[in-house]
Length: 142
Image (cartoon, rainbow, N blue to C red; front, side, top):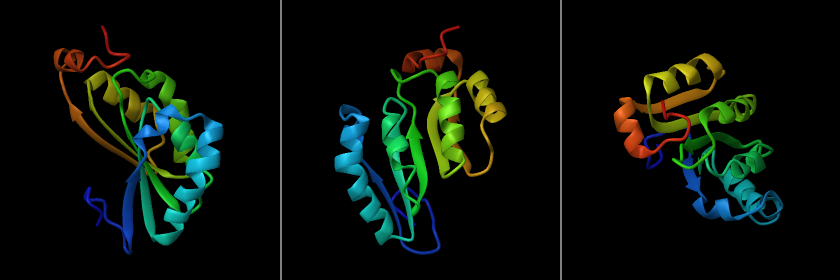
């Protein structure tokens, strides 16, 4: 069990690279992905923590076979959920996906009806539109 309560039947680690938002896809491929591959190969189960405002990071990691899952926290200034769904469905074809965020009922319904359920973990808090507005989430202004 890693420090975030994610269990695997063997060695398990959750890593992150929040500064990756400052890197291009080419820089990620050159500098980050090789080290992420080495970490993944050293553990039975690895999950990488990312943010929705940095979609290039999980894209760069999809080719790492030993990587089991990607964890995405929704950023208030990241792309709207509607734009992320196709990207996340591509992830779900190869990896498990954990989405963490406060969501409105409309947003939760949109994710449930549009994302492939295999390998999906929605770690969300259901909040009112008013509470969500305080977070300033993109795509939930009505």
